[in-house]
Amino acid sequence: MKKITKRQIMLLCMLYISSLSYLQTFSPMANVARQHAAVSFILSGGLCVLSLWLLSAARGRFPGKNLMQAIVERFPVNGRVLLAMYLLFFLFIAARDIRILADFTNSVLLNRTPILILGLMITATAVYISQGGIRAFLGISEIYVPIMIAVLTIVSIFMLRNVHINYMIPYFSFDWLGIAKGAWYAAPYLGEVIALPLVISGKSYRTSAGLTGLIVATLFLFGILLLTELVMGVPLTGKLTHSGYELIRQLQITDFMDRFDLLVVGLWYPTALGKIGFDIYVLCYLMQMVVPKLSGRLMTAPAGALAFVCSIWFFKNALQQFNFNYVWPLVALIFELVLPIVLFAALWPRKVKPKSG
Image 1 (cartoon, one colour):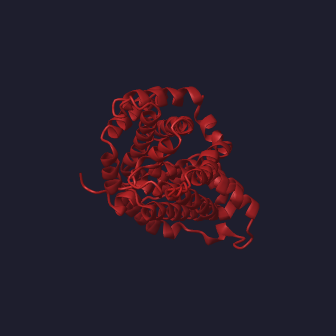
Image 2: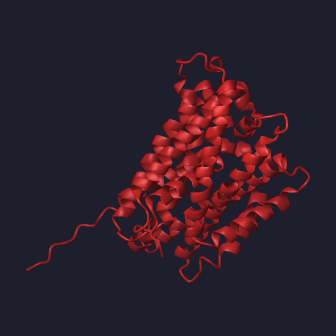
């Protein structure tokens, strides 16, 4: 098997962090941080860099193993209990992501198709992707992440004529409390990057690649949110449910291409499916670590079905799912910041007792 490169890890990191963050973070961040909402990404990104570094450093003490294997090796019973907690955490993430994409597809592309059918189709595709293993996600990230970067860069250039600097007035009146609240909403989505050291072995995972991917994805989201506010204005960015998508809709190249957004959505959609597929992949890996007799590959379909059912069960409608972003950080930061600190201390190298005589 070919060696996983640093570039592939970096692109996978960007795929996992930014694919659905456009749809969920921009509106609540603009509501609280106003014209400086993009700065919140810098604060939350710094917090997640610390979390990822702690987990990567803890994993580095166990050469050739991922963090799950290291936890189970050091704490056979309590370690599996902790992984079971992470299992529930990533189950909720998978269910939430399925519902996010299903609601977005229903509101933008297929208005008359029931959410149930859309969620089922999304889940089936994600399960099929996850059965391909880590190589499938690396392939998707290598193809579609550069395409999305190129497309959004071109969109940004075309949007420069619609930029209104006066939307950011007052420029230097920073509401640090509002910026901190914006970081509170963004941190759970950026913090999901902890999945990488959990499932990718030490031989393949490189700390520098993970940190680079996190930083680049954070700066990318920073730029897109800033452009959204400069083009659409702060009040409108905070009121729209999918303000990142609405930015794309503002672009009209010619009178005959008034739905250019459909082309962009078509190029973006595989990254969102890849993100959900990776959620299921992490879920199956956790199941295999908690119950060693289970086959992770054979559990992809049951795990996907469970995530799909939970996506329907947990959220009554799209508004309820969107409003959950206001309380989700309280739960997510326990797994993405508090427990990494605990693991960094708990997996400290044991002192070797000197041999007597």
